[in-house]
Picture 1 (spheres, rainbow over the protein chains, first blue to last red):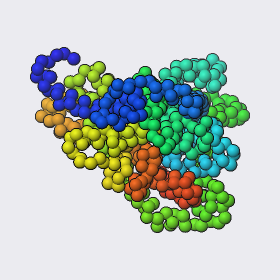
Picture 2 (picture 1 turned 90 degrees about the vertical axis):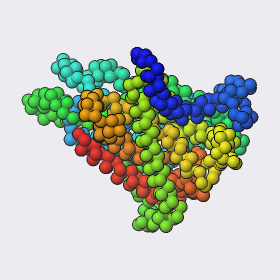
Picture 3 (picture 1 turned 120 degrees about the horizontal axis):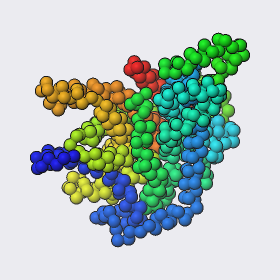
Picture 4 (picture 1 turned 135 degrees about the horizontal axis):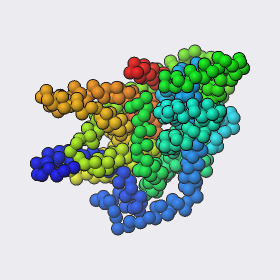
Length: 280
Length: 312
């Protein structure tokens, strides 16, 4: 930007005001929660409110990270999110390869079906899942969460990966085919290495979907040692005495992985999230 | 879909010269690759949907063995249940208001971030800030807003200091403000989806269109109405449809803040279904309610798919 003098600055004022008001709306609740995590529980509703109190401390985080029950929430969330992300990427990759490189009768209807499954209400599936999972004794296990989460992560991953593989030149695999490589080798040795950025961004999106899931985690687990972070935060809310600072601390720790992913992979992230609407 | 035709034709012409077994093998390959997905779809989608539809027509389900087929009794029971009808109304009110405000805010922020008078760095920083609300899980959003909307919280403090209210408002606990409060929360966390989609769309509109309009003497509003909106229309329609479907399914945010109360003023189809199933154990009724929600969403997604296909 070149400086345009006083006139340019005055011209900018309304835009800057709007920009700051918008940022206040978006950012203030987050800043307030962040500040709450460093307060003692008594200071949370102090009048007048202060962003930073004289009792500023990291005690809340110490309390959370030394409480085995709360640490377990984080372990569960990381474990389930990682496993679902890996499994989703593997299965989606095979399907996307088929969609992108072959022509077959079921392709178009199946593709349409996968698009439309994104509209399925989770609560509709929850009731039969509950019945099924209890019937096969998977209630309150990791496997129950992992399997059911795949239903929501897979359609999006397939659609995005198919789109991504379609952008890679077919000459690559054709050449390998002529050299006698099997189709699986084409996928694994040729397409996967060059598709890594796309796979990574879809993986990030999948991870976030799972990390943030609440309804299934609430219903398909029962004991404290199987709960994930969102449910753990909610359980704190339901306890007799509100430990506001601990809820804030859990919230900060619970949003860190997703925020870090956002900051470092912003471009991938956004393109992943909007691909469904902007592109196809 | 035609992008890979060269490759496929090559396979097809080759296979003409081979024996039948080989043709079968070639035809089976794509199905082998999609088989894990097909299996998951069958076990985790088709079967459960069939099950939930089945549950909705019987008098006992899930925790009890079904005894008889009751036709549409469960559906009739729901539609004569005043709270359920109210929940449908609430769901649509919540969804439509959220959607309209999401769109307005998303568009406003996208236009601001697309102005040329701001430096790239400023735009990048504010873009991240504006997108932040999107990143949080419903539990965290619920905690956040319970904190700031608490009767002794910061929102009341500012309103009191400004002289706008004389006594503390129970934002989430009062019949008059609870719906507004859950809408506000959903607006806060939902507009970034519009923002990023619309911003991507705005950046794709050719500068020439605006220049030509300027030459013809069009002002900012004209340009917005006659260039920006028509150019963005496909994006606007598809994100609005997706948002409508997702917002209708909102559960966690409402469940963790008001639980559908007070006096059912924030009761949604999803929260009521959950209560029917998991606090009252009336699984057949809950299933009927879940099927109704499924029908709403399926109708909308059919429209969505139709619009998408018309675009291609």
